[in-house]
Image 1: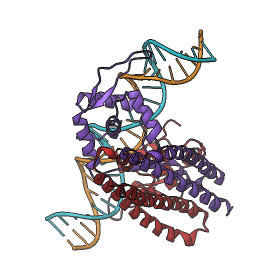
Image 2 (image 1 turned 90 degrees about the vertical axis):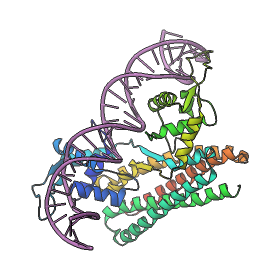
Image 3 (image 1 turned 135 degrees about the vertical axis):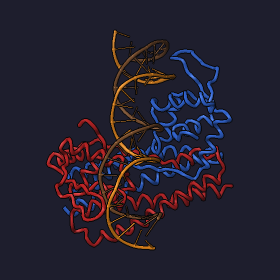
Image 4 (image 1 turned 45 degrees about the horizontal axis):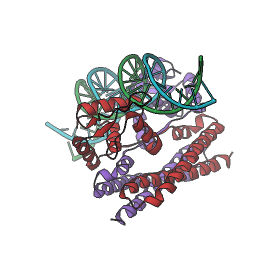
Length: 182
Length: 182
DNA sequence: ATCAGCATGTAAGGCGTTACATGATTCA
DNA sequence: TGAATCATGTAACGCCTTACATGCTGAT
């Protein structure tokens, strides 16, 4: 495989169980996996063009135009499924984390303690917000776990929940250590 | 500030408490913060050149050359400290996570269950390895926490430990859900 | 009338990685 | 002699983000 643009895999994965437009793909990413993967229109549309050219996806003739701008539906091809499977089976993964908040904490002694506490507070608020959303997802998924498909989605939701819970716990602990020793 | 190359902040942060060469900076990044931030020579050296030009750091005249190739020591300037402080004080942060493993799990139904379990196992092994290292750091830091400087480093270590512990717990849970319902 | 949401796409540019180039020293 | 470690740097290239361009529909 020449490129390892992961956005290709995200799109192939989404198309593997339903036909979608570029716009829909963006919504799926934002709605379901944005806490561990992101995608912008500026990467989605070029990826769609490229994969249509190399045969991993194809345009559907149904361009429904009852209202709104034209829509282009894509479906995955056999070659696309192979490409997706190949990626899933390769052992190499990169889990690339960039916690700017932690960077600020690490260099905390260069700033004021209050700035760091503020950064931790902001971090905690994000985590609380994300946790709330994920708990809603969890509640929706639990009654339908008998379907094998949902199980995988459920696992990512559980991951998110345990991650954010750990973060929130850390935020409290961190503030205690910083404030308690003023 | 024109650019928001975070690597600049990493370097300024490290230089803020000791003079270092580019090579040393790389080692500091790899050794202490690589679990939440990374840096390569290809980004460090250009950043050093740029910041020396714009006056945030300066070369030290001491180019000690007793063996090995020439070394270039850098120190932070007043302007560099201001730049660092400004960044710490800005409220905006981006905590950008890319868990390729989770992506594979999310699209698990496109592959074999065994592939996904393999991916989870690999993920767990990474977490265990990282956890072990961080626990060593924790043990080293605990006796010297009275110094304010070490407290911040300690907090990032605690973050890492709680994150990896949560991940390891999730790995077991995930396997149970996948295997238990074969 | 105008704003938000739907919908596709391009352009510019930044950031960062990998690989390469160079070269000295130490140790087996 | 060759490999490993120390040490600095460049070049190519790729991915992705932001901003922009376009344009329709429906609601306020």
